[in-house]
Length: 429
Image 1 (tube, rainbow, N blue to C red):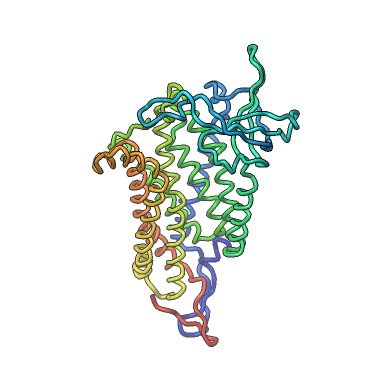
Image 2: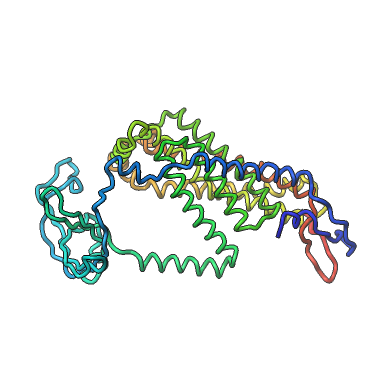
């Protein structure tokens, strides 16, 4: 399908088999393209101008990377229950750290690299499931070379999850292919490309202290352009949905930035935030504020694209069902669908955030804080801002997208009508 498919197909009249002369591309359709394509190009230029240095440089400067540390796969040959010295991981509710705590010692044989066959002793971290380090299980171990007179050290890193995760991925690919066909597989390819861009551009850019709003919007627009056209094809329908998505992204970013400032949110709410701010240096606090804003935009990105695509498709189908419908009628019909979509999507966003922040809710419940203080506290206030900023942008994007789709659709030829008994009939909205 190309951009002319939605605007230049001859179509039968509502009650007879006569065809109309194909229309040229409508002004509304051209206007959509004149907005979407320059924005997509601007995102590419913005990415090129703000491309950050590798994050490994910042990690080395902060002392996070040990150049001699190596990772190897190993197989557990046996385990023994023993006692170990207490650490901060074993802190008690009263704040004390016990002298000794029960722990598990695992003997493992390295299965790769220059140390293959070597048997090492490691201690799995607290919380590691016992079945994950049972005899015969695969684990990953760390090797620290000898330095400053100290012997080499081996430590537990993690369990191997290649097989279960690969199985889950293959099951996802199979289900997607069976249900959604090639379009579903193209969506997966688009998702993979999006993750690559986030990993090589957005995250290093945040670490480097680039303007979070700029790089997040550049990455988001580029991602949605590629994913949209790759998944749904280069059609006027897709372009119209992308226009609604871009407007929604701008709204979410603006509302998120305003709400963050108005609510005086502190980006440092936990021990990990303090550590990250210190590692990032002089711009650490500013970077964490940017990370929060980037999270607000990215959290609403997928749902926003889903809503705009659905709304445009609904308007297109209403137009095909009733070629004589005015744009006002298409808008009214599309909004009837949109209202249901808004209601269900708000629940989706809210419960997604509740699921992510459930450990925080458990902690607050244990402290016994009043509900009013809980929901206005720093950590939970962030979730409220993130949820409401995304929801407001989403709700506002729906009528705008539907209105634009209605105007574009009414100025374009409907793609298809319902056919019965050799005659073409219009189904009224």
